[in-house]
Length: 316
Ligand code: CP
Image (cartoon, rainbow, N blue to C red; front, top):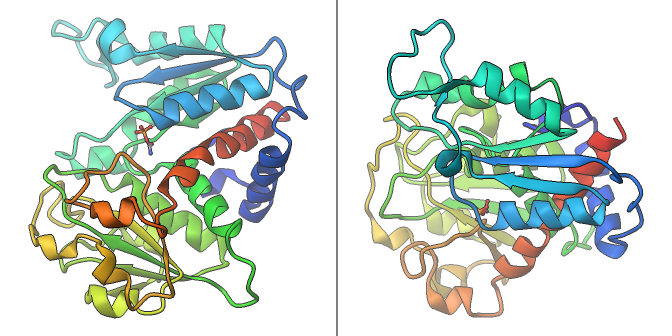
């Protein structure tokens, strides 16, 4: 694998899932693979899980991870080509990415969207500038439109819990939130579930919250949440801001929050969320603290997803 930005970089999603589950059973089997190799982890935005799980994964492979909070500790980056840099930006990404490429064998980057300019966000300008100038493989730690390490984790989490011959019914439901959030996690979840191909996939959200069809790719959309959740085996809960009315909150209906009542018509569904989650806004305490929630083991699986990705890049 040459980089890890989306499913397009992965020769086989089912194979990558299996590699991750092999690492879960035997975390240190490839300790020599990353010996004398360094992973640069560049954060333009906050993170708990991605930051820590990817460092653990790198160490399991014998790599040295180095974290740089460039938003707080670095020079302010200029991302546009051809500009006269007489404003607030001090260093162009052409130099910054190229210099970091001299120090690291793999460069991993987290960069959120501005949610103001749809075209700029959806062309993935920031991460593409790093890919263009770094000169080493780039791994997304979440970009403007996708969060592939999270989605690989989510597929692993579903697969390890499903042993029946039929496909599991996986429902991704929108939930309320107080802030306008990116579409990266739901876009990516849809892309990976589709690429995995082993689930009966339904998306439910209020009208106006349709995601980019490039990612949902023919998935069933059901505007009635109760109808969508019927017989679900897995419920993936996530808020996102509107893609159509870009970056806006167009629904504040709190009845979309997932509580135990919502789970009654499911097949005793397991409840997933990428975290962080706003309790009693997105998901009720009774669900997060109850037997249906698998959000903690889901977050634990972030290590194995990252380890599978780093190992496949190290193997070239
Ligand atoms: N799910 C996730 O990416 O968590 P962090 O933002 O804390 O890394």
